[in-house]
Image 1 (cartoon, helix red, strand yellow):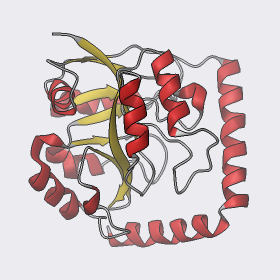
Image 2 (spheres, helix red, strand yellow; image 1 turned 135 degrees about the vertical axis):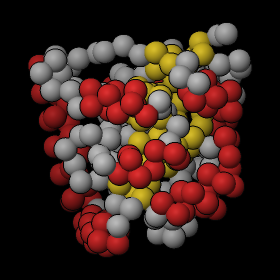
Image 3 (cartoon, one colour; image 1 turned 120 degrees about the vertical axis):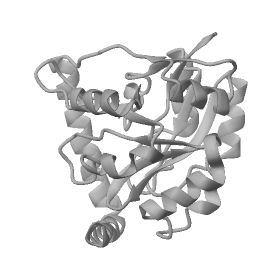
Length: 251
């Protein structure tokens, strides 16, 4: 079977939470340059809908799969190739909602736990055990070093639970697109075939540690992005923090 390079967790300037300075088209161009065959754009909270970007990706020979990074019971979850009507405002926020989405979409939808063991309250951690039967994959995140790699815990958990590890970029900077990616064996270049390859664990990836200079540049850019977000979207940040606190109390 052919192998396709996939990167199924990326953000761009359509994100309602983060302030990013590159468009979906620029992200697609960067993915094309790096040999990515399958790309997902997954804004925080709001499901990605952009027919123009989808058509642009197709013209570049890239399969663009829409998605969202959604807070479910206070934890971040990637949901790809779903009906956007499932995500109105805060109505989709619990495991029960995730179960309904899975029942409705079946295998045409992909559910991934991103960066599950990183030291943030919104990372899944033990919540993985509660939703393991809904997951198609857990993410191998881009941010790791020889001396610090929370992905190793994800690898152990995935092997124990017979769930695929999928390397993604979680790009919040254009240069990070495709930094972390996976090779997936699939019968053809369609979302359903790629998802089946992931579920069948026909996935490979390589460790790519950041060096010190890459880390310094990456960290500086993250700090600047956070500052821009707080300056340009103070109301959004306040509402999101309030919403996240309510969701975590509910869970």
